[in-house]
Image 1 (cartoon, rainbow, N blue to C red):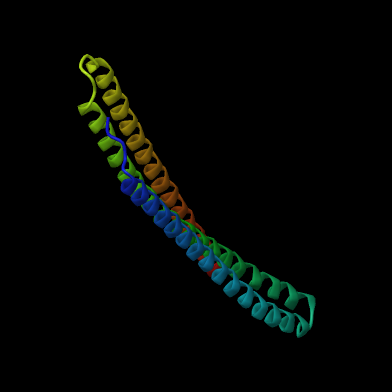
Image 2: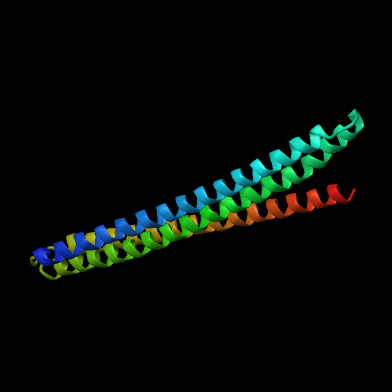
Length: 181
């Protein structure tokens, strides 16, 4: 039976460490984008709060105050929808990068595992054909199950993204209709 050499173990370890650091970098990039978005939102909110306070202090009667309040609600809803879209885009992009790296690593690991299984099968003692067939069948079933799960996750992710985009478009249209009215 063939086992991994010290060089193969070291190469696998190095590959795993590189993958870990790559995933960590992608995660930090996502966090950076999130922090940047939140800083932009906070800065904009401070400026708008100052403008709103000045406008409220210059109001002369209750009717003017009600008009000011009504005028603030619409942009606030649009800003919340835009923030949600940006937040979703950051999460989706980061998730896609992580998924891509995980899929690549998984494929590589599967190939190495299949190589070890094939090597073991070639060196199996005579009379162990049934056990070899069982191992091959189990490996094939596991690979098929994994591929099925990957496809299901991709379909669910695509459906969730389509639903989010549809809801965002509907919300944007609704705010434009209300503004025009």
